[in-house]
Image (cartoon, rainbow over all chains, first blue to last red):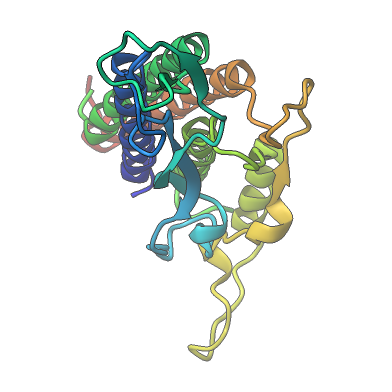
Length: 147
Length: 132
């Protein structure tokens, strides 16, 4: 049934967006963290989204015989670390400073992460909205002919 | 003469449900880079489906014949890309507000078809019983 698939599609989006919120929270928590070893500094990470086709479950009642061409969900294919260069700061008094007195600051951009968070939560909300509406439609459809 | 009195609203309902899927796909992929929003012309699809209903049925003498009552629409020709008003850098053409408006309209249409169907069933029931 077609409406069930709407729940799958919106569900896949909820999953992807919540992973995005998760990485954003992780980035914000590590904002401003420093280390004396540039390889150990936390780097901002972001999920990579990709459209994913569902299995073709077309029946003789389907409007589109090839339903894969019509509907896609979304999934996270991987988490990418930001390639923005780290900031090097001269701080000889810092306990983690290297032998030259330098520490390396994480490349988390707090403003960009806040924007990311708002975008992800808006997208999450709109997909929740879709699921709620679809649920109501399904309930109404189940009671066809009762009135 | 159409044999099934509920067929037309059933078709409309099925089409609305399929369009709900397409619009939900667009909204789910609102943040996917390179995703192109799609949609189909509902009234064209519906008139295509109802034309198939109103014409005289074609005899199927072999299982290999296409079922004319299935009302199948070729996905490749029926689905079209949405033209965005504001293109974005990542190549995504989903505009959430446009999609949400279309989705809301489509849901209203679905509920309207449900209401018509319910009224038709109520009418049939009245005709069968012969009393209120």
